[in-house]
Image (cartoon, rainbow, N blue to C red; front, top):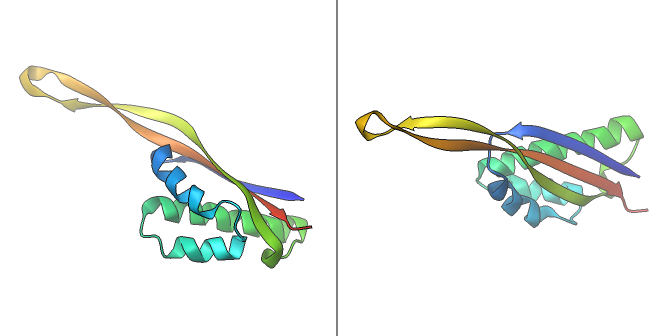
Length: 111
Protein backbone atom coordinates (compact mmCIF):
# COMPACT_ATOMS: atom_id res chain seq x y z
CA UNK A 1 0.00 0.00 0.00
CA UNK A 2 1.22 3.50 -0.78
CA UNK A 3 0.54 6.70 1.14
CA UNK A 4 1.54 10.19 0.07
CA UNK A 5 1.74 13.76 1.28
CA UNK A 6 2.13 17.04 -0.63
CA UNK A 7 3.54 20.43 0.18
CA UNK A 8 2.58 22.88 -2.52
CA UNK A 9 3.95 26.34 -3.23
CA UNK A 10 6.92 25.99 -0.86
CA UNK A 11 9.05 29.14 -1.16
CA UNK A 12 12.30 27.40 -2.03
CA UNK A 13 13.81 26.68 -5.40
CA UNK A 14 13.32 23.10 -6.61
CA UNK A 15 17.05 22.59 -7.10
CA UNK A 16 17.77 23.24 -3.42
CA UNK A 17 15.01 20.88 -2.29
CA UNK A 18 16.09 18.10 -4.67
CA UNK A 19 19.53 18.00 -3.03
CA UNK A 20 17.84 17.02 0.23
CA UNK A 21 15.36 14.53 -1.23
CA UNK A 22 18.19 12.61 -2.91
CA UNK A 23 19.66 11.92 0.54
CA UNK A 24 16.50 10.21 1.86
CA UNK A 25 15.25 8.33 -1.20
CA UNK A 26 14.70 4.62 -0.52
CA UNK A 27 15.38 4.85 3.22
CA UNK A 28 13.26 3.83 6.17
CA UNK A 29 10.89 6.70 7.08
CA UNK A 30 11.96 6.90 10.75
CA UNK A 31 15.63 6.90 9.74
CA UNK A 32 14.99 9.66 7.19
CA UNK A 33 13.35 11.88 9.83
CA UNK A 34 16.47 11.53 11.99
CA UNK A 35 18.75 12.37 9.06
CA UNK A 36 16.72 15.47 8.21
CA UNK A 37 16.88 16.71 11.81
CA UNK A 38 20.63 17.22 11.52
CA UNK A 39 20.75 18.92 8.11
CA UNK A 40 20.93 22.68 8.79
CA UNK A 41 18.95 23.90 5.77
CA UNK A 42 15.50 25.38 5.26
CA UNK A 43 14.76 22.80 2.56
CA UNK A 44 15.45 20.00 5.08
CA UNK A 45 12.79 21.46 7.38
CA UNK A 46 10.27 21.60 4.52
CA UNK A 47 10.95 18.01 3.47
CA UNK A 48 10.86 16.83 7.10
CA UNK A 49 7.48 18.44 7.62
CA UNK A 50 6.10 16.76 4.50
CA UNK A 51 7.58 13.40 5.54
CA UNK A 52 6.05 13.62 9.02
CA UNK A 53 2.70 14.42 7.38
CA UNK A 54 2.99 11.33 5.17
CA UNK A 55 3.79 9.17 8.21
CA UNK A 56 0.77 10.59 10.05
CA UNK A 57 -1.43 9.88 7.00
CA UNK A 58 -0.25 6.27 6.98
CA UNK A 59 -0.88 5.78 10.70
CA UNK A 60 -4.24 7.55 10.96
CA UNK A 61 -5.88 6.85 7.60
CA UNK A 62 -4.53 3.40 6.71
CA UNK A 63 -3.61 1.87 10.12
CA UNK A 64 0.00 1.22 9.07
CA UNK A 65 2.91 1.04 11.50
CA UNK A 66 5.47 3.83 11.18
CA UNK A 67 8.33 1.36 11.67
CA UNK A 68 7.49 -0.55 8.47
CA UNK A 69 7.32 2.47 6.15
CA UNK A 70 9.89 3.08 3.42
CA UNK A 71 10.19 6.15 1.21
CA UNK A 72 9.15 4.89 -2.23
CA UNK A 73 9.73 8.24 -3.90
CA UNK A 74 10.43 11.85 -2.98
CA UNK A 75 9.59 14.06 -5.95
CA UNK A 76 10.13 17.81 -6.23
CA UNK A 77 8.33 19.61 -9.04
CA UNK A 78 8.54 23.23 -10.14
CA UNK A 79 5.81 25.44 -8.75
CA UNK A 80 4.76 28.82 -10.01
CA UNK A 81 7.39 31.57 -10.10
CA UNK A 82 6.47 34.91 -8.56
CA UNK A 83 7.61 37.65 -10.92
CA UNK A 84 9.18 40.65 -9.19
CA UNK A 85 11.18 43.73 -10.22
CA UNK A 86 14.22 45.31 -8.63
CA UNK A 87 14.91 49.03 -9.13
CA UNK A 88 17.95 49.70 -11.26
CA UNK A 89 19.87 52.77 -12.38
CA UNK A 90 18.36 55.58 -14.46
CA UNK A 91 14.78 54.71 -13.58
CA UNK A 92 14.82 51.22 -15.06
CA UNK A 93 13.82 47.93 -13.46
CA UNK A 94 15.37 44.47 -13.62
CA UNK A 95 13.00 41.50 -13.43
CA UNK A 96 13.68 38.40 -11.33
CA UNK A 97 11.69 35.36 -10.29
CA UNK A 98 11.00 33.94 -6.85
CA UNK A 99 10.63 30.23 -7.52
CA UNK A 100 8.43 27.79 -5.61
CA UNK A 101 8.34 24.00 -5.29
CA UNK A 102 5.80 21.25 -4.94
CA UNK A 103 7.13 18.44 -2.72
CA UNK A 104 5.53 14.98 -2.93
CA UNK A 105 6.62 12.12 -0.69
CA UNK A 106 5.25 8.61 -1.29
CA UNK A 107 5.63 5.98 1.44
CA UNK A 108 5.03 2.27 1.07
CA UNK A 109 4.98 -0.59 3.55
CA UNK A 110 7.62 -3.26 3.06
CA UNK A 111 5.20 -6.13 2.39
